[in-house]
Length: 270
Image (cartoon, rainbow, N blue to C red; front, side, top):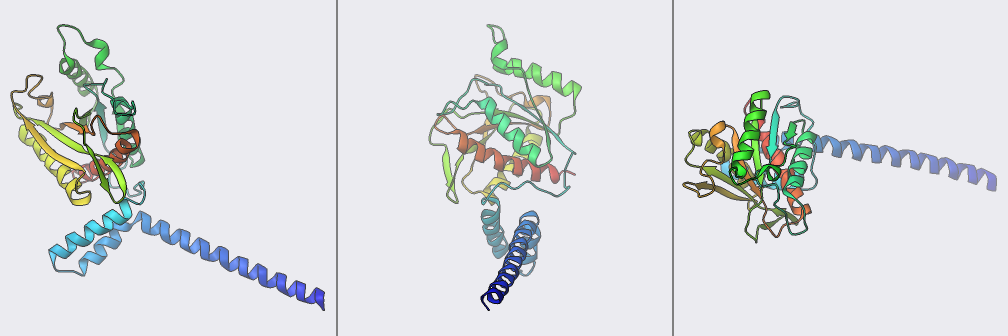
């Protein structure tokens, strides 16, 4: 009698384990499906509202909930293997509070772009190695730009720098970020085209991550440089990521969002 009970109990245990495994697999694939197609869920939900204000509010809330939980690698073929971004650092000696260099920031952004299927090329020459009395930082990075633009096609070129200011951190959904500032040279024949790009990027950040962007700083008659080499193309932008007080983690969090921003911007250009 005891042996019979033992066998019956074992059988029940196996059945229970089987159903537990099935349940776990169901949860896993359900979450995975949600993660990969959350935009469809958002759009479906928004379609049931005629009030635009409600749509904006719901869109913001869902973007916060889903995109801030973890950095997701997009699985759509929206722009996969289609675009190339060039990253460089005019001031490559800039560092953050924990000694993270601005060059590492370019590497972070490059890695996050690659996760989204966007090819990125980082300038491997350092501007600081070529400085002398006759050539300043922007003169040298200008030469790098010309060389690369002559030999490659780039859909976006980004000069990544660090702000000289402090107090450039922001908390969004309990996550720390380094604030982002866009800089635009007014004495530049491509001013309007470059500004159009920055407006779209700034709008994306303000819509999905309010407080992350410090906006667009337009500068004219700057003693250092009043065009920031943006006269060389209609798709060259200058972005300041964080300031002197930021850390590796905060900067990396911001480059994740920048990668998503660039992904959406380039995808809309197709």
